[in-house]
Figure 1 (cartoon, rainbow, N blue to C red):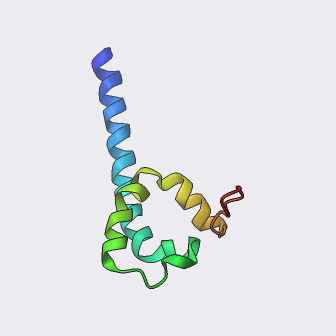
Figure 2 (spheres, helix red, strand yellow; figure 1 turned 60 degrees about the horizontal axis):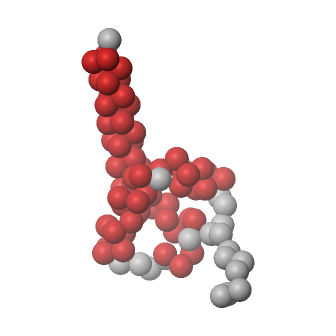
Length: 79
């Protein structure tokens, strides 16, 4: 019984990571410019660095990309 639940959990995690990696690659080279205008003209190094973060946070980034939401503006005393 536990083996089945653990196998399902591992399978779900693998699916999440595989989807995230695919999304991260596409996002790093096509989508980041849509969300953050400051990323335009960024080099290959920047794009490679953001792939792991984009892979981990792909649901939130996909939401922002599809909704065409602009980059958040910080509103704190240091701005």
